[in-house]
Length: 115
Image (tube, rainbow, N blue to C red; front, top):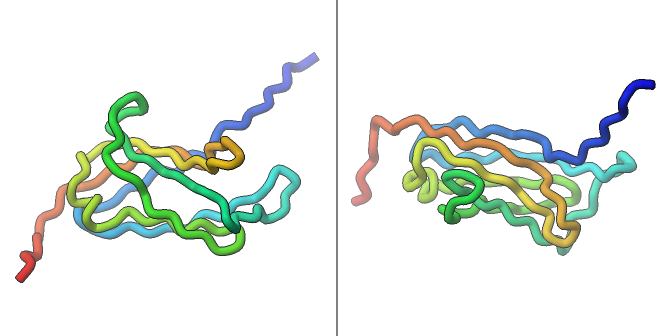
């Protein structure tokens, strides 16, 4: 008889961007039964680290509408992060990691000076 593997690993979402540029993306959340998850009044936390066991370098901003998360890496944070980091996003009330991945930022060439 063949083995069966059950997995609850988070979906891998790698972010490939440009240092100093704001990065915004959306992710729908679906419950195990296939229905849209209810994210109203839920806490979502996404920390960025150099590696999984290092200090927190920052957090992604997360806004929700119905079952869709809008996740933002701010300009300020994208300017200060190392070129390679990792993150994951936790649904706090359910103790469930929804996504995880790497953030890779290319060096910025043109830098606009504040006046």
